[in-house]
Image 1 (cartoon, rainbow, N blue to C red):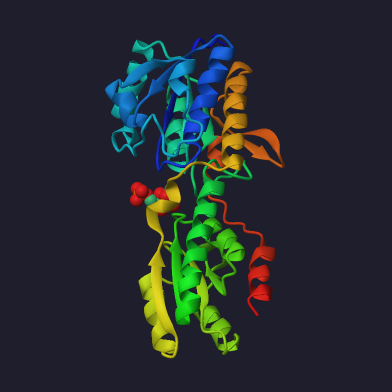
Image 2: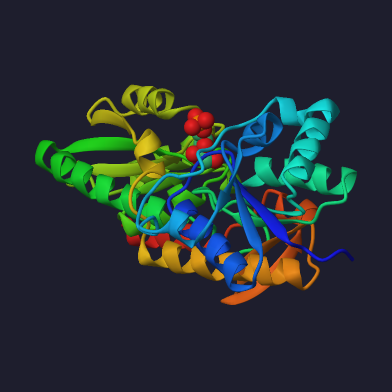
Amino acid sequence: MTQIKNIGLFTSGGDSPGMNAAIRAVVRSAIYYNLEATGIRRGFDGMIKGDLFPMDRRSVSNIIQRGGTILKTARSEQFKTVEGRKLAYEQLKAHNVDALVAIGGDGTFTGAKVFGQEFDIPVIGMPGTIDNDLCGTDFTIGYDTAINTVIQAVDKIRDTAESHDRLFIIEVMGRDSGLIALRTGIAAGAEAILIPESKTDLQSVFDRLERGRKDKKSKIIMLAENGEAGDAFEVGRQIKEKFPNYDTRVSILGHIQRGGSPTCMDRVLASRLGVAAIEGLIAGHRNEMVGLIHNEIAFTPFEHAIKHNTDINPDFLKIVEILAI
Ligand code: F6P
């Protein structure tokens, strides 16, 4: 095993609050262990283009509290090709980078996995996504901030829903995962939740509205994007058709869920995982994601980390049902 001297780091895929705290932790830990740190801008795209620069402890000052990513991010088509990955590897060699820390989600780790297999370069992943949809960590960096952003927004919507006696369908992000909708649905006191994992169909929402209190006209239904029932407008259309007595409105929260200052939970998670990523590389870990399982650091091979976890805690759905009476 060759000794690592210079660690390249990048953020890739959708940004998430806490990525800057992760960058700070990686750079400072690398320096603490007498390694060099090289920033790579715009993920795999920047790697291919050679957009690399040395980072020191001061390049990450005053960023722990900031949303977004100072390294910028992108989704790269070119990196999906062998030629693109070869170019990226040549750039790393030209800048003397001999190990990588990739901060991102399943798309990032899919690319990192292939790269680590094709070229002799150790890669450690850090889970940076609001979706919380990776195996090998209880929480991803950004999820806590995103769900707090969602409940603040839903609380505001509830005020107006209550004043007008309206039913709101609120669509949240999550790509193919309902974990944002599920947790925020409980926290915001939703009447029903539509998420892909539980195969909840619209009929069960209709039943719930049918059975629910007739005197309470203001209702919140949380919907995960990309579900089988369609988007919030489609769900709204069907509810309107079936329940014309409800004054129904739709609200799509969109990208506000990805921005903002990270919560304490996300900053601490990012800091712990950043230190562990560097210590892991030094200890010989490669092609793995570092995460937290039951509050302990754990390394999970990329191929397992990217298996979309469709197991949700059935108790959570039951809780929604019980508390919506
Ligand atoms: O993966 C993070 C995420 O915010 C998903 O929840 C969402 O489906 C997707 O990114 C949106 O991507 P974009 O910003 O490229 O539209």
